[in-house]
Length: 224
Image 1 (cartoon, rainbow, N blue to C red):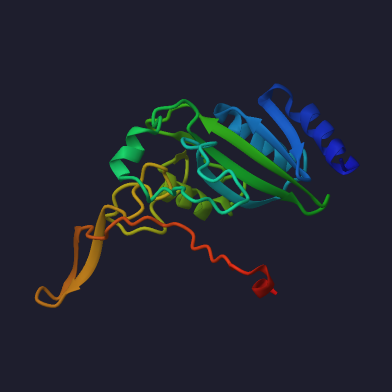
Image 2: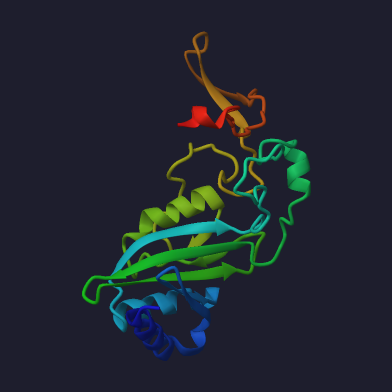
């Protein structure tokens, strides 16, 4: 383990104290987990006291299907499934959508002067309406990242100056990166020449199974 990461861990623990719920060093990356109510306070401390002057990325995470892996082999399976195999309604009914700590917000920070990085995560207790403080006032670059997390995960960032969708259409229904959102979506758009405008209709795409195509050579000598 790199000494620089151990030094960073020691400094962060000393500065943030009880605000850290847990932390770990893995894959040459230092990650801390904080309470959602401490999110903004921790952001200020990381910038002003520890020199993390740049926010590189911020995103939402939906942990509702975390650990429910469908492929646990390095071999090509004879049978398996992806999210598209079963009927969507059947998939949703099997997911614990009201599980506690379903949603989390993760940000990656960089200290240019000290040449070090940190990953910060906070779980949101309110699954029905996930809300957490905005960090736009700390790092202005969080503006569009928070809008993206709002658009795709439905996470509300309290105090954001202009929280609205950024990738989907104005009348879009739902949040596409939530695990319970259907792969085919809810509606589709087409141009209607008679009406002279685009119209929205219920989706007509058939949800098909997406499985890997595996080509096996009968004669090992042919693989050369």
